[in-house]
Length: 227
Image (cartoon, rainbow, N blue to C red):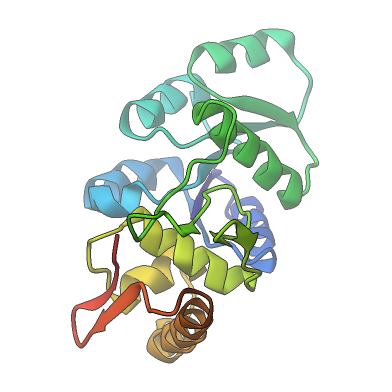
């Protein structure tokens, strides 16, 4: 999930919609709401934030420092004017990248992915290897997973779900948690059927290639990625 912070609701909504078109969950927040969101969000769910996008808001430098103290996720600031002093101040405050508007959501996603790869010392970090031979490798940078060294091509939603389950390996996650991580703040009335459908297709593909199912399903408890 991406968190978009901008005092202008229409601007935040524009970027949230853009992330949605790319198959990624996003949530728009005003500065005054972010502190409450941090306090109300479980550490497990906070670790699934893929990046913060800071638009127009007061005291962005102080704000960025506060985010950095709570999350290692990439922070990207959007500037409407070119200002060397402002850019340097943002980098000093802990911003990972400063981009001049207008900018397409795809570029933000690419920049955030590059930042995460640098954080992982130049390579995509393997999120899970469910057996002792490490047959299945799940990447955290948007690449398709690999089984026995060969890519398993997945639709975006199924890949995002697998990445989320792999990040929480060994821990049960509910359908609601999966829905929030993959879809963001969309209509929750369809969450169970949507998640069940995607997970069912994903498990079938994994079984066909692995010969077993690495995702355990339990009624009420949800799904657990076994490792």
